[in-house]
Image (tube, rainbow, N blue to C red):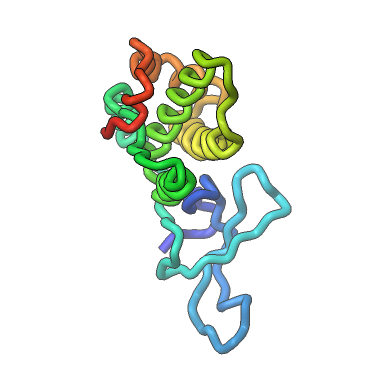
Length: 180
C-alpha cells in the first residue's frame, strides 16, 4: 500500500502524488478503499482508483538503479510492431497503459521513425502519433526527472542523446514494424 505524499506512476496519467485514501467516492455500496491521486502538474485534478488495483497499472517510481538499467537498455529498443493502421491507436494506448518505461521509449521511437518517413515524402504525421508521443515523453521524462534529480529539459536532452543510435541509419518504411 502506498503512503500519503508518495509519488507513484498511475497508468497513462504518469506521475501522481498519493494524497490519501478514502472509501468509494462513487457510492452504490462500494466499500473498497480508494487512493486519492493528484497528477504531477495538475493541482486541480483528482483521480480516485481502487487501492487493490483497478484497470490501470499503478506502481512505485523507479529506483535510481532501475532508471540506470532502463537507460542502458534504451538504445537497444526498437519500434512497436504495428501491422495495420487500424491497430495503431490501440497499440499506442496499450504501450502507455503499461506504465513501463521501455514501452514508452518504443512508442517514442515508433513516432520518430514515422516522422522521419513522413518528412522524406513531404508529409505530416497523424495527430494520433504526436499526441501519444507527447504523453509518453511526459510520463517518462517526469519520472526520470524526479528519480534522477534533474530537470525535465535535462532528461529530454539525455534521451535525445541516448536514442540517437536508434535513428542511425534512418530505417526504411518496412522497419516501422520491427520488434524489440
